[in-house]
Length: 297
Image 1 (cartoon, one colour):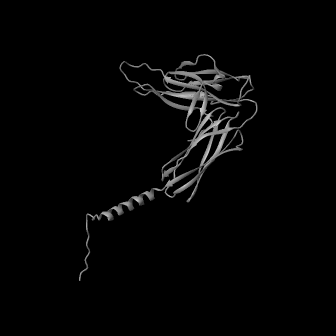
Image 2 (cartoon, rainbow, N blue to C red):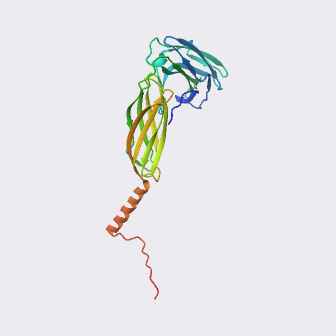
Image 3 (cartoon, rainbow, N blue to C red):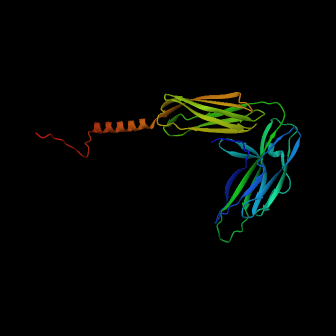
């Protein structure tokens, strides 16, 4: 699984409660994201337009969050840039089909900050307004829009990415996917854009698993990659991982080396057949059908 910058709306369908029949809803927001360059103590204002593009009246809730993204999860936090964002007016309201509302917000950069790049967002959730009938079970589908707010601040550029832990498979069977997991933390002041690969070298040649992602300052990142050996791969493989990172140019490197033993499926089949033949011969088991061929004299 790969992380990409959230430069477009991230729509997540979620289920709330129990309902029948299912009710679809839809929200649209513009612009898709915001990017600001601020100095400590500066402030900037922005505006998002939210429109109900569905056929039902929608109850909308708007919150401000910090985005924590990796190759496994998208997690929200109330720390960091989330505390810099102020939403003006009501954060809960209703929209009838075709109606729209403008959401105004302000980003106030603190006077002192220990990192340069920050990723926040306005999280807009909508669920249809329903009047449940007595004794009726209902399922409500909702929609979630994530509008990212990226802020860059001046100051010293420190590129630092720490590999806190990593795990690699020890033994794999043919067509059995193995997970390579890396726990990373950005201890610098700027975002770390990552590229690289896992190079697996064995008897039958080389395999390459590409790596990419981005880690923001103070964030922890879980990178997960998989490799699935085929019929031809067998024996020990050297798994060398190289992660290059940097804000604009990937000039710094993290490296790890592991050993993975691949047991081919055909070897297991041969061993089972061999063991079966050995048991039959040792116990003198006669076949259920005997065929005798005689020559005519």
